[in-house]
Length: 446
Image (cartoon, rainbow, N blue to C red; front, side):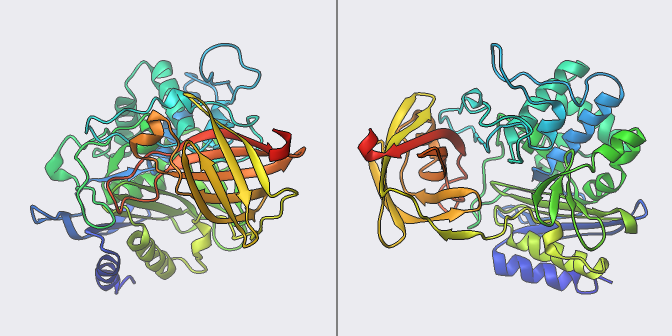
């Protein structure tokens, strides 16, 4: 099987401008496929090999989650113990388990720093509760950032050391690193933008436990199949207890798990600047797969994952590993056309006005910028839209030029979040996503 792997990888790289791919398949604990294609370093003409280490972005999360569960088995922490956020007393505090499942009440956030002298984001300003812990799923790197610090406090060891020595090494795996840059540059893939520009060697973040892993494809596939051997049976089973993400996917303790028809599929993807990674396991078949690439674009990774899984797993559907939400968009219908209020930022409130237009769009003004864009209602949101408006804060000015609004009508007011971010890296490098509270009222009430 996989007779067309070489051809499919070559086509995927050519169609999507991906410098290289590394693919591994593990069956019954043995690596049965380990192939790599393209260039780990384009300028140096250094070919990718199965031994090339790739940054794995959010595929770091199941590795961190395994370490947290291992520490819980050893009595160093408890899965249902609270994790303090910030200073002072708090009415609600998320537990370790809730942070692992992304139900801790934190909002989506990421920040990346490339050593270019630009302002560093203070993530503490954004690591705040946006809703009651346990209320619903929202993917939150900040939660794993907190868990990394909890692990270091509980074990008395640097996080990378604990992950290497207590998670990877006992499984016979020795090439994992947690670091802004791989310690052996010649053994790692250079990261590239979606249009082929190299990223700086180092990329740091406030949430390394969520994002800063490096691994080879064969070792990542081996980890995905064998991690449960490190844990007590009850704890291993708990990693597969999920909260819903969408109709076909749930999130457990560090893993996405399929729901509904077909074989159980356990997976996690990762993407950030210069990275698109995926690992998938099918316990029923004692099968696991890893596909790694060194490009921001996910299309090549996804094409190869679909081919490999479709060839090896009867009944496999891409929805079993995709966290994408269904398109429930509909026209935004609000009781008033004009709204005004504020966006709460670390530097103080920023006035915001929003005016709906008859053609289904809205004009937004904030911080001296304005833009008109399409808006819709989506799921439980009564208004969702993205505007070319940059918040006038030092953090947003670093590299977050867009403003995304996600608002719900509650007791006559629009409440929700405003996210400052950048859409990809076709210009420059990937920026940060910064989430702020937002509230608007009908303009006549202001």
